[in-house]
Length: 492
Image (cartoon, rainbow, N blue to C red; front, side, top):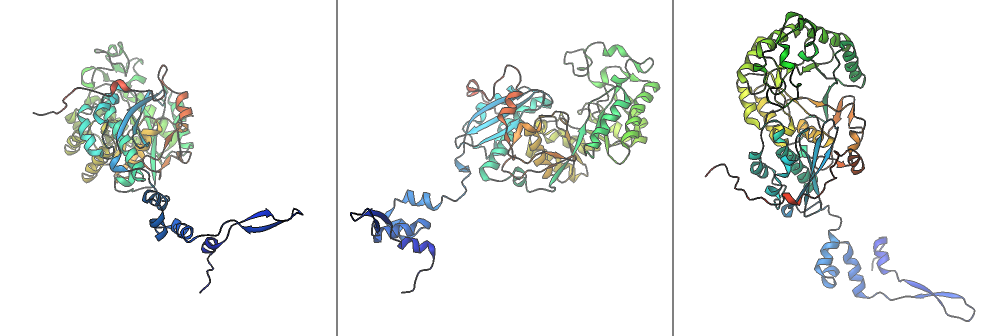
């Protein structure tokens, strides 16, 4: 018989021994502990696979458990079910940001985020609609809940749940979200850095230069009529500002009054002062870096055209949200009249309204905010349609790293992507909110696309707890939202 040299099989024939006292002088000798039997041999031989001994002498459940113990079982996706939805509201990140967590019967969970400044209730009201559902059926569930969304912050709940479903599906199948979208076009995502405003042009220019020093290769600045409103002879109808500020929500306030209805006009002097502000920034940061502009104020499209024409020598990357997005014809008049690219879209829900703007050639670029536009897949669809029409897509974002990573995956998978906003550069604990991902998240103005399953992140509970909105809890129970009695179908 041929000898067996494999150590694995030599061990099968090795006779265990024990030390026993066998004489009066306390000396010990080795004696056999147990002579191996044929049954023992066959059972041991079966340990490495589906050998004969495994079937003959072991329960089938035990055999299958052993032989598949090295198989990666991240979940059983077909049996995955949603069991809960909870909220943790973070303050100052940069605004109030409700993070949602969707739990399942298999222990894995998905993270999403209601848009900055929106109510967590936009997500909670949808809880009863998704309990018991399979989170991997993302598009079907999206169609089930999207009728509860609307433009701007009112889309926050729908989008947060959609993000969390993608995170769950990625964890269930052990793949990153971008891979489920068809793969990626880029390994790192270019960020454009928003910058806090100063009414002193030189101070603001220094702040933007600070972004360049951090490695950012794309900048955005806020400047508008509010900077010159108190200057003599710069603005017509300054009384329009007397009630409220740009973010006021009371009817009759400046913030609540849409651009065509304020009666505000810019004088030549006012335009010169605003242009001098941009000139100071350009003189500081130069022309190698794209520089976009936002927050011009509430005045009608003809004032926008006058300002846009005056800014043309400074080659801005785009002029953002000069009038509300739904004034398609006014946008087209502005776009046709000036040479600087125009852009809007951060408050648009679903692809249909983007399609109207694109088909009308009313804007030069689109800018969805994934937490308002419909979530990850809907935003990719928006980008894909724009690409077919030759329109680039920038992306608006101002939230926590949860929504940030949802944007990163979508941007990676969308070919006509240009740049993603980063609104939290000055928050020192912002990146600390998440873990299980290489840090820093941003290097020289770029964010690496994560390779972990789902969104590729986990929450750092300790840091989140330190920055919860006052009076709120960390993922407290939400049982009161478990049931609802409503027939939500739009048709009879």
